[in-house]
Image 1 (cartoon, helix red, strand yellow):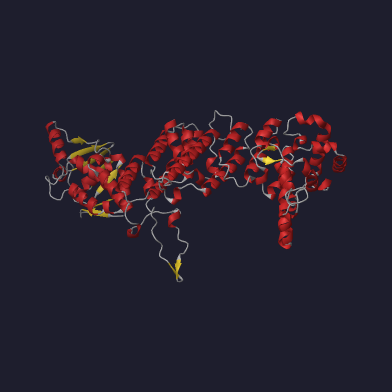
Image 2 (image 1 turned 120 degrees about the vertical axis):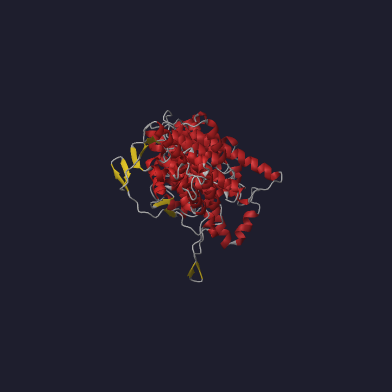
Length: 622
């Protein structure tokens, strides 16, 4: 920290309670009152430096009074004492903490060069311009002191000088930074250097681009806004760095105390102002601030009850990069007057905004417009969004008050083509079934209709066939498609060892079809009414295959499902098989008119009831 010493005489000011005086043999002849403090001083040294005191003393002499009241002096008693010591020629030290108060007090006392050469105003101005405004932390300290000295600090242009000095240093090339600064955070992702050594010698640590962010977090909101606007106006700082500065400031000034203030019913005016200021300062560049930070801002806006326009602006920003969010970021609590855990409607509007902007970007690309590679939403972006949606569904499914329609609406917003596997969706559906056991058959059908059994992995399929919360119809589909997958794998393995078998499968058989086409032909023959949840049910011609993959009653439920899936066809637990076939036997031929969400008769197994072989088989299973 820079400092300046003035005067050479020893400091003989003494204090007794609220009285301050100069320890000298000369009797004092003037009393100057500043607030509650009285200064017993001498007229000559004061009047030789201060034009204002000359005027005030002259008026008091006419009234026969030796007391002058200057309680409105900026900086109060401490600032006046500095000016008084300077008038006496006593040693006084100025630094970043007291220099502005002394400068304002000198201005109040009119300590100009016209009164005395080398007066206090001149000396302080030289110190400010040659030292304070050239020092990083001193400029910030002085700027912080300006708030208590308004309007004097504003009229003296000290605020403008400090802001310009801070902005100029923050905009400088980091390689030229040679002064101390505070930095306790991780570097920006673009600045990470995996190779910290060169030929065995440790590299010199470089100054990060956002080195200045933490130091200015100490500024009051109005001053902070001035600094950020000045930095942006210079145009030499990347939007990503400005965004990081706003994030650090929001965590310190907004997020750290918002929850406790809102829950305790405290006045949140300061939080409202901070939120609006931060949002107004967000860089316009796409991706300049993280999606997680934006979601925290919109959460704060909901908590503070901000207007729709402000929240709408945040939703648009989030929609442009929603694929970069995390599930925890989306778990925004619902308002206290809602009977729900999370604000699902807000997330739904964000998803809609993402799809609107996604479609707009696709149209722009078709028209020949170019975008940076990092901003073009491709397959990776859609895949990330699908994973995000599935993870979010799994969390909100735990809310017992979440309506089914809202769950389905969120699930249907994810691009279908990007959902290469339905494991995440299955996990979310299973969680919803667990937390909402009172769903009707038709509601279960709508819910499970979101899932495509063909896109479940072996591990998920193994879990599904042992999941008693799922409709039996869905379990049958899972078993059927896993049998198809196992058969295809077996045929592929056989063709690798016997190439002639692969050729034989392509030749026509006795019935006109190829030897390897019997299952595909049966699947093709399945009618559209047998499709549910995106999957195809097994046809009557495949019931023998279904029996073989069900294990004919030899399955054991438990933790071996994953192993069974890995080694061979899945096996349905005995309990579920018994339930399936007993339900079929009790419903008889009338099952065709019942609800297909639970009725196994809708799996096109009616033909088996007319076959003696089928009856014998069913008996052996049950």
